[in-house]
Image 1 (tube, helix red, strand yellow):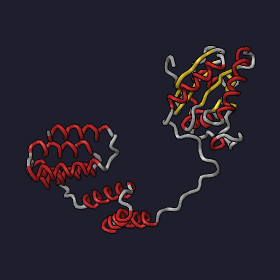
Image 2: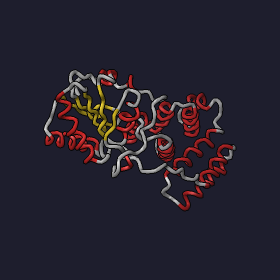
Image 3: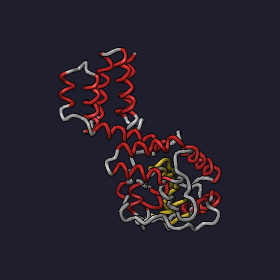
Image 4: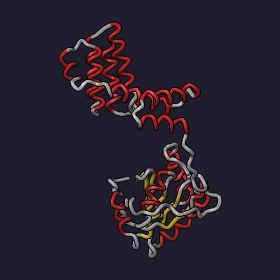
Length: 295
């Protein structure tokens, strides 16, 4: 879209009602293919809904003759799509804030919204063949990037896994050995359980953090060659919510060490990386620094 479009003024999550119940037969997940949108329902019907499927916003006016030509064609295509995308109809005279947010200069204006952001737009009447091509392009652009239509019916809450409940209860009581044993029990039967793997890494770190000396960082700074001191200080920095410092400390040790100490430091650093989302910028940066230090 030309220019910046700011939809933030229309985001009223605290008061916005949820999308309405299904009202269209045959639509995946019961999504209504055509909805009338007001300023009060914009958050739910356009921004929230666009995280599931593309929302095509038809900005029109009762006095607009071209709108009377375009809208029926859009409605026909929306009905055919059966919920794969939603046509959101907005009367610009009754909802001026929506028109202002999209920077509407004339009607009809049509805007495709996906994941809460405008994706493409056009103005004026278009032939059906051109509309189909435009909609196909929107579908290709968002393929695999949205969550898809919701499942029909009310979501059923899955019962908590008693194995995880036992582990979490042990952790809440400060029983790190018990929590570790509980997670290991899960992994013995399900070696690929990523949730248990992640939780076990967290528990091991928390258990180790309980024994960090209060002066761990000062000790490490006074003894750069001491592997155990550097690892304890890194734990202290990580426990203090400063992972960048913890990573840099171990990487610096890797640069100036060799043999078993270097291997042990590298192994510990890789374990610390696993405590975070691997896409975090500070993790990505630290991995690059480690590779440079090693090679």
